[in-house]
Structures are given as structure tokens and as C-alpha cells.
Image (tube, rainbow, N blue to C red; front, side, top):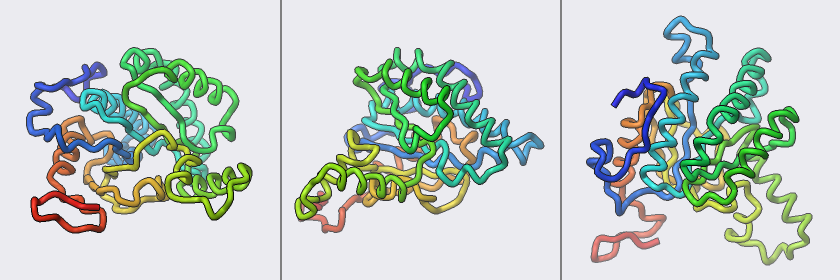
Length: 260
């Protein structure tokens, strides 16, 4: 396959890309910290913005693979609450890139049966971008395929605080709060917990991403910057996940299966 092509078909079972996949041990929910766009560009003598553009192109291909794998959810870290500290020119470019992505890709994602949702403080974004987000979400709200979550103006600690505020506003008896009903107040309330968290570009930290949802996630750290994290590299992470022994704090029973 040609990874640098702008067209990338949805791979399906039987595709050589999926040759080593353990279909019975796929993650339901994969999250990606798409790190290293700016450093990728800098190494090539380009502006950081070129790295973000290249990252968006690669994200489209990763989403196509997630569709082919029939994952329940794919969540990506697009812009954190801390990213506002970056140079204003870079922030402005990223906001423009989000808008252009939605203008260009919304219809195709809908045709691919994707359901998109934006996580975070969306109401603090520019009104024009908010309108594009709501339009895309409305267009795809009835779709039944991969739930594609885009964390934008998002922070994990902030999400938990907002969830607590919603619980207080709801008037729920504090003694009745448990893990299940707390989940319902999170931005990812419709999704299962994260099974696999991938971070590109070599760093090994969560960076305030999905702190609640990743409590028992398997972590996979890739040295490639995100623009280099090809569909093949994504599948390698899925294969690695399938080979792991997930015990959730328990022990294997006599038959070799895990008990939570």
C-alpha cells in the first residue's frame, strides 16, 4: 500500500494488512495521543504547521483502518486545554485546520458509517467552528459504525471536574454514586473504557488525557512521530495488544484465562 497517498481504502478481513490480527482479541476502544507533528516538520526543515497538516492526512488513514477492524471507538487527542499556551499563530492554524478537516471530510466519514463526537469544552471555541462541529455531529448521529471521538480543548482533570459538577446539579444522592453512574457524566459516556492507549513520538506519559477511562488500559509507546505512524504501525500496535495478558488485578485461572 502507498501510505503517502491521499486516497486510502478501508481495509477489510483478508487484506494483507490484517494478516496477523487476532480477531478474537481486538480492543473495543483505542485512544491515540498524536504526538510529534511539530518535531517531524522541524527535522525536515519545515514549519510546525506542515507537521499538523501531515498528521491530519495520516489520521484519515488510521480511521479507515479502525473502520476495517470494526472497532467500537477511536478517540484521538487533537487539542488540549494546555495547548492554548502555544504561539498564537500555531493555535490559529490548528483551529483553521479543524474547520477545513470538517468541511472536507464530514461527508465521506458519514458515508463510512462513522459517528463523530467532539470531547472537551467545545463551547469555548470560535462560533464558526462550533457550528461546523455541531453540523458534523448531527449528520452522523444515527450512524452505527466506529464512534470517532476528537478531544478538542480537552483535559482529563477538567473532564472529571465537569462530571462532578453535573452530578451535583443533577441532585443525585452522593451515597448512590458509583463507577457506573459516574461514567454517564463523562464526555465518553457512550463508550467502553479504553483498552489500548497509543502514544507516538517516544514520550511515555498521559499528558492529562482520558485519566478515568484509561484506568486499566494497555499502553503502547511508538517512537515514530504521528505523521510517520502508518496504518501498518497502527496494526502492529493492535497485534501487540492481542498478545498481552490482561488480568485486571486478578490471576489466571487453571484454564489459562484471566479473571477480573
